[in-house]
Length: 450
Image (tube, rainbow, N blue to C red; front, side, top):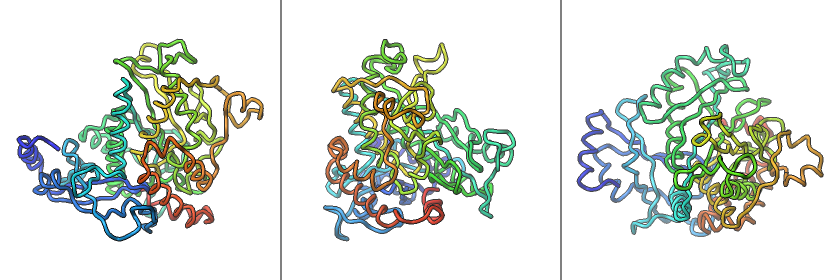
């Protein structure tokens, strides 16, 4: 919340920009972005007292059915959605509208134990207390389809031919993003038909998650103005490689990037190696958070650059953890890791929260990485995989849920309430859709994650 003496000035500024309505969003445990809309005149009240919503949003599933979890097993209860007025952003593509992320509170003014954004804030604070800060950037892939359900382009992948149908849309998308404070770095047609990928600048973790939500909102809404529907689902067109949502991250101490300039493997510092080793060790048990939908496992396959095995390597696009060193002269700022198994059905606050918690656990325990690999891990012998600590990640959501349920790190980090609510939502999804065929799954998920 802004200081009282600045609230009026801030509202006046928004009014001068023509803002009438504010879309306040949060992302639930099904990773669906939910929204409450308030008029500008209610912003000051909302930042003090919140906007009411059912507590059961903690256990809403992808199909809007409601799971049951301790504390969320009756229709009673209220959460207060409090917009972060420091992040109220007028929407460049929608005159009269602004957007803000919310935190979830109870009626006594306490942050709720199931607030995903609140969990990320706490994990960031805990890391900072140990002198470690993180920079992160989401890199989503998305698919454009026209009103006839035809892809915006049919390849060749990465080519100018694939760019031509979306040139005007992309030009205005970049303008809108930069007007909203999202620093665009690259965008290009991707491998699959109708598919594009966008990269934006790195930020502190909470900001990165917030801007990712705004990025998706901007892409989705602006695409409609150009006659396209957009989907961030893991598979949009059967037989294609599907959409990922890679997360780039680096860790820092006292202004030094711990991912470069050291004596560890591939130039990692000792602390950098320990941090990444923590992510490596916990990856298998956390895949239900990183790839949390039934359809995620249609994408998370060997040979698709999705990171289907626990492995790491320098610029290895089949590795789950890809080290990006950057070119000579930029590495002090640019060196980072890319976590590849993530897709657009994941919660953008829970993913970095668990990544940071994993990394800090690795630092605390002084973990070490196995030797990096440059080969496709699927081509290695069983002996070579064992030597490098390589394991195939879970191949379906049911197995991933079983792994997560046994994760002490996840339960400790998320707390019992959020941990159990997340599991309940994902179990309901698995029980409902786990046996459906791929065509039906694509139809179900395509527009739930638009």
